[in-house]
Image (cartoon, rainbow, N blue to C red; front, side, top):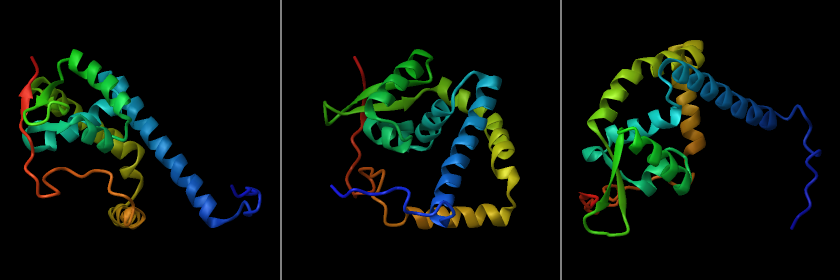
Length: 174
């Protein structure tokens, strides 16, 4: 293992300053949005992210493993989150019809209603803590720059449809 002296880079190194600014901005925006959503609806951002991904997925369903990658959670973290969301009636889980090991998360009608009620508060919080602080041109430039950062990174999500494979049909559990 190579011994690296972290003090070698000068503190004014633009790469380090930008890295720290990115991390601080991400944490501040997520914390601000989450605070707003919890205050208004009592629901964390992670619930919103799961509901959005499921609502946009074919048939309102995604494999749990794929959903975990999409919302940046470990499989066990998503399982615990899904347990709470299922108890709240916002999602349900179903078995894959062609692969007994596969499980899908499926948004319920209550989950769709919650998302419709929740979304205006989410957008308001995003505007307050992030988008409203930037011009349309700055938002576009930032999206372009972040896209460049993501180019060449390992693909975080690959659905069966992306691979040209037929997506297995979820089957009700039980």
